[in-house]
Image (tube, rainbow, N blue to C red):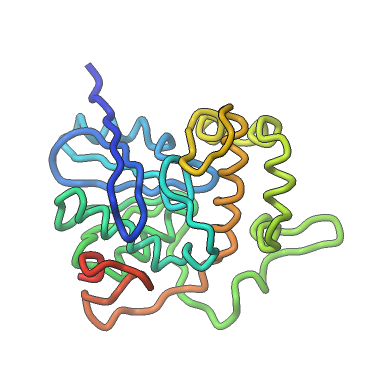
Length: 238
């Protein structure tokens, strides 16, 4: 019989985070990308649990059943790393291996960089570690008269939300199977409508806010107690 995936809500770094988990043993935390949720890791949750690990896949800040703060400034890499430090505290775990795919990969890399005392190993999928550069990332992204790089599309507040949220069913039709299942079937906490497809519209708005926080690189911590969020609780700051 396959390992059972359990769900709960934990308090971390000033937000409430939805977590899917399975198994017992050394913890492995998995960070999803855009526009996804914990559901991206459903097969890995079972496989890791059956291999003797405590597999954990949260809905990242702004996604799924996890809180969706309104201010764009609440989606920095420091906030996202702080969420995961607080997640380990909520789980009662001192350290973990962390994995990240797509947008989750920079979060995983920076979690290991900024808090090596809590994240002892890192797995990066599809996105390598990119150190801080001299120029802002958005200045080097391609732009033509006919098209722009998708991250640039999210920079102007309100544009992506209006276009993608106008018909969530049609929008998700161009996404992966995982993204379609996420957008169609996950009840967002801040949703005001009742249908699943109407709830999906709220996710586009939160995801757009995250995309406006393009990573500018990293900074090296002076100690393992480096704060990881501008509003990190004492437990998250170490």
